Length: 140
Image (cartoon, rainbow, N blue to C red; front, side):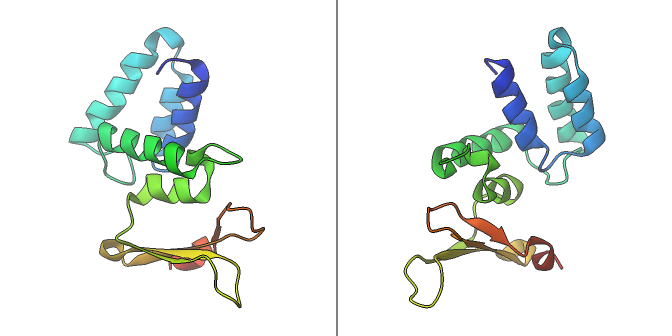
């Protein structure tokens, strides 16, 4: 991590999947201890997962970078609803796109078959910023 703002962005993205107490340790680490705490966090993840989604450091960074590259617009990609779900669940098994349906706003459905879950994103304002719909209902 090259800068303080980059570190904060990565911590913010990690907050989607990390347990709060572990994330808090990273946030409170003094700059001189930050790298040590960061490494400890990921080493611990290998032996006793501290992340709700069991992924490695490299997979997390892949998802983070992919989100920023592919979903950025008015805000950084990891902060978009697409980015949040991508970081949490990874690449969808299937994406159903409906950009030009006559009777509805543009929308996408992301399917994760192994989790038996799907997410519906709608371009509410017509500017390409898709918003996750009924997230809590979808987790039931």
